Length: 108
Image (cartoon, rainbow, N blue to C red; front, side, top):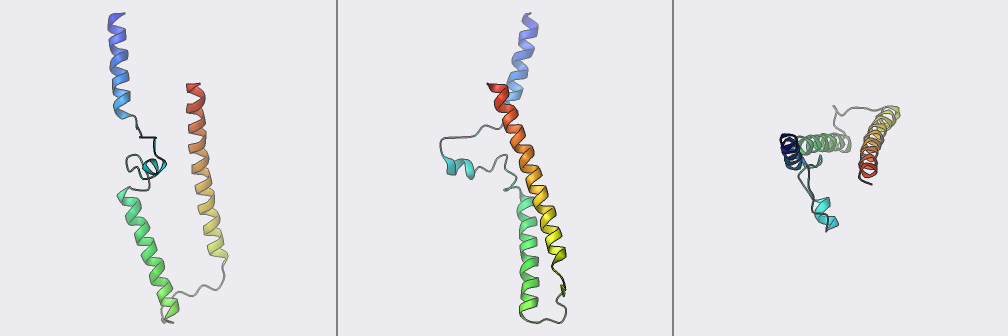
């Protein structure tokens, strides 16, 4: 029994090291938390900046009537892309919400 409880204590210590602990006293502190956030990962930031720069360049090409600016004759492609992105965001949010409520029900 002694050996079994020692293994349990070790397991609990390891779980506490891997767990993300947040300072929940301030909403803004929690909002700006970098650890465990997908928004502050370097690949996410650089990917977003790259796409924003690409969009800015294409808009500049349209505004200046550049000869090599892409001509988009119909808006269907943007609507399809928007629907796909919306689906992905809703799916990801639903998974996170389900994980949250599963954890809440396990605690109570």
